[in-house]
Image (cartoon, rainbow, N blue to C red; front, top):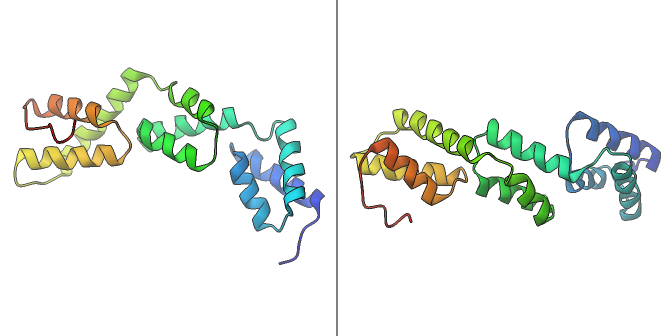
Length: 163
């Protein structure tokens, strides 16, 4: 692959960042794929940060909002995905803490209610456990999932294994 000059790489990276919010690790990955050297990569990323094309705080807030609202991910999964992008823990914590607790619980309850209609099991307890695994897999906290499921089922199954 032919290596692009730094000006073209800067221009294409700026265009890439203009489409939607990006973090430094995503931009670096694109620059490496385009054949940028480490020094070029550093200069381009520094310039994009200075000019406001990359703002990791803005990226975190946007990521949390999108993944919570559109993908119905829980805090655990969102935090994990942000950590995979090598973002500072302070930014991640600040962005995840913005999620409204009442809205969080409502989204979880609605998701579980919808999923309950389609899950089949040999007993209600079996369905309870399947729904619990589903919600925990989406990144919701186990204790909160169990509370919401108890509310949905209006029953008290042996949930000690989940708490």
